[in-house]
Image (cartoon, rainbow, N blue to C red; front, side, top):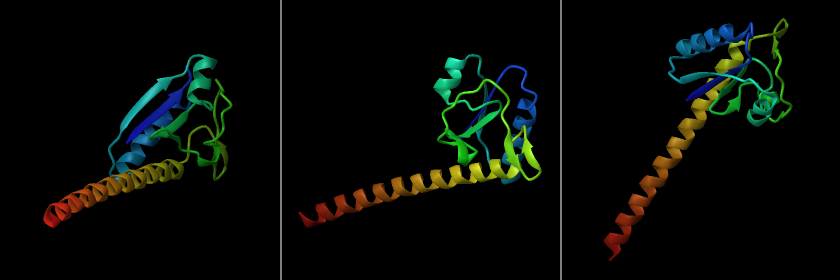
Length: 131
């Protein structure tokens, strides 16, 4: 699992978001490659689909599902929906849900690959036996 935290220089919520992500990973018993990327220019923001600082992606998908299709770049602070209104850091539950969704997707992909391999092996064995 790869987690990318994209920020702008001087973002007051960057370190808090990194701490939240690592805390949720630990609470879920998961390990992941976590990288922090500083976005410096509008062109880079546009190319990366950067929606504001901080933006968190798990395996390339924004953790805020409602904004995954949004493509308006922003070199400004980002706010997330929270129980009390809006917050500068994503809620723990949003991070947790994104991690769990990525884990489920990875498990499904691994199971599909294992099933395909097993079916190919079984077909080869059946064809050999039929000769």
